[in-house]
Image (cartoon, rainbow, N blue to C red; front, side, top):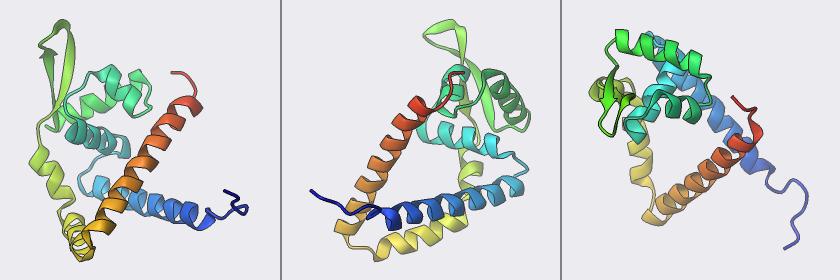
Amino acid sequence: MNTPPHADAPLLLALRRLRTDLVVHDRVVAETAHLKDSDLTVLEVLNREGPQTPTALARRTNTHLATMTGVLTRLEKEGWIERRPDANDRRSIRIHATSVERFNALYADSIDRLHAVFERWPSEQAQTFLSSITDIAQALETSGEADSPAR
């Protein structure tokens, strides 16, 4: 297939706009909850993917392990997470989100607005969107690992 140069430019620009809008939205949410952006990112990963070791969280969020220690200390102090012994390895701990409802409440208004948008979509559009977002996320996760400097 012969694609003219930059035929995907509108798609890339739309993604960049979405990224900016999401970053700005998350910054407002973080400020409202008196969290740092990095704290909110860790909470998002824990709420979406479940308990993880500090090392896995650091890798997943591309955060230096020493920085992750500070993030986890802040979150634990504010009651957002708990450090629990790993059931499979007593030498290790796993980080558990403890305030899922409190976290979800931070996004309640935007979730309601997004539900209203999604409800208007035919199921085929919703499925296409889901497939597209999944493809994009996988492409960025792979490139992020390859493009980032070793930690």
